[in-house]
Image (cartoon, rainbow, N blue to C red; front, top):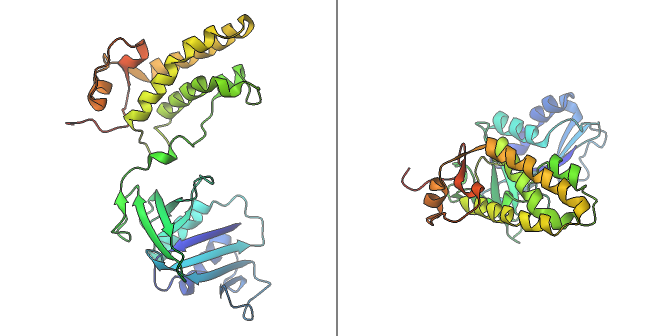
Length: 281
């Protein structure tokens, strides 16, 4: 395992050795805690190395942790939670969005994990600021507490029905994005709206608008492909029906503050557990 944890806490480096020894299952003298710039006092034969460097701002320390053993089965999130609970500090670790560099995750001593938006200044040492946090974390009192919609769409959800109809390596796969997105919507519903059990109504409307494009898309296909795609759409439609109920479009009209009239049938159905706030409720 190689990972970098950023933490709060004044004395984190001097307290973390027994936590790492326990987590990785090695003797305490097999854990080398060292200043990142100190090359003379290293235990180069240690099983676990933790190079620390001071930070400033909302975060106090950077801990670069490496282990020589095969620990591929160990989770960075579990390590972050272990350090947070054991030392009573907040631990910031990488998100599962490598393409969104400004999104991290934070583990709290209470065992909560939430996405955060962090910024790093060019000061020496760097000054770290948590600008936005999905969950309220007392260590970051100036952070804006709110959902982060930018992390929703990049989450790649499985689409087995679409994949069976249009394989991922199909040269025209991109043209079928409305179907891919439609199936992803049903997966979101069925799995409690990952990654944060929240979904803005505006995105839901975009999903329905993409569903509107599917009928025209099917009609433009060669006859040999048309029925396969039509069958796939019908399967996803059935799943959508099972995960929603007909409310005449009342919920969506209320939350979007627009009338839902003259639309296709799916516009008049709402999720069984709408993942957005409804005005007045």
